[in-house]
Amino acid sequence: MTDEQNQNHEEPVIRDKRRIDPETGAVRQPAAEGAPEEGAPEASDSFDDEAELTVDDILNAANAEVQDPSDEHLADLKRVTAEYANYRKRTEANREFERERAVGQAVAVLLPVLDDLDRAEKHGDLEGDSAFATIAAKLRGSVEKLGLAAFGEVGEPFDPNRHEAIFQQPSDEVEVDTVADVVETGYTLGGVQLRAAKVVVKTPAA
Image (cartoon, rainbow, N blue to C red; front, side, top):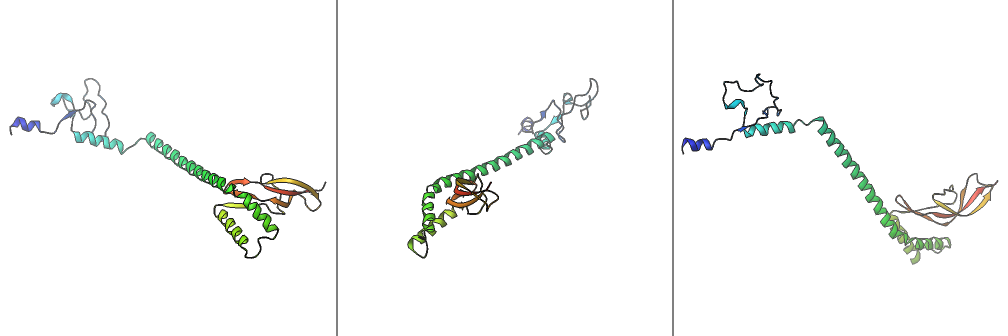
């Protein structure tokens, strides 16, 4: 192979007129007219007063910039991370709410059946080990596993957010509005109230 061919296979020389510092990645500022630039070749040097940079020099300079991010970039990264964390929390909360709502719609069709079981229990039809009592226990256990919870007890304070008063009777026995009887049990599923309890309320006598 001739000398000319060997020269053609030498590593390419890139002349970057921005004068990138291969050590720090910084761009060298041009010097005042007539004054030599820092790190620039003397007038007696060759190659027309330009810095000779190889491909490796430029790659090293780029890596130096990546490894030394600015405060602005770091702040942007923190902001994006916080926004993503908030997005995940909202998504998970919405997913749980939608799950409870869907299950609530399915369980709501069973509430009239549960009402019938409550009435049967009050009449003593669920006592003993009868087949009817066994089926009632299994049904109640199944809906409880889904998260259904009954509320409404005689003697608890009346809460208009949870109770629906169908009748009020004054009484000297209470100082605040109090549930005297539960006509229809209320139900919740997780954080969702499916139905308010229908109750008779004792009110303080005037």
